[in-house]
Image (cartoon, rainbow, N blue to C red; front, side, top):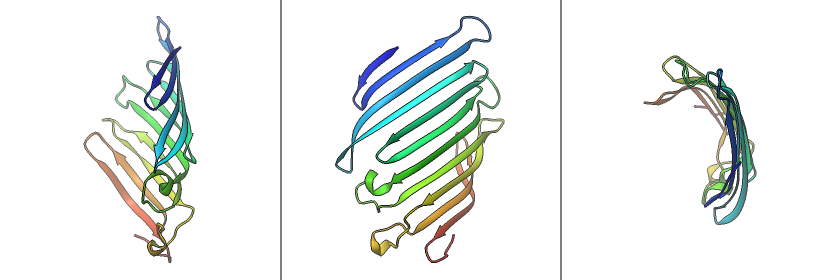
Length: 172
């Protein structure tokens, strides 16, 4: 077990890999963090676990802090033509006003579901919802939600079929 006190908080990690094929591995890591956000002290906790072998690694991660919860999974195949075959992330309770000075108090949740393609790009869907949309003149964010098809590569990020829903039944 490796333990370290970092500027952001306390880190702990553990990992092992078998010496023979198929090189089974497992690892765990956690970070218990303290930080200042918008001038207020906040606490966060992150945990990740990985397992499998060097050909196929599954990763699960969870985190919470500043009212937000994040969790996800990834399937990695580091020596294949598609090194990241799956990446799924869900989040809830992200309050922009709590995270950033001057940002409107919008409580956002959402998810991304991406699949790897030959060549290393990731493609899939993105969904974001705002639990408390409000007009800009009321110090709010008039966004109800966004959906899009996503393509991420090392050279560019693309959002296609973007559908942004706003107050008063407007959309972009």
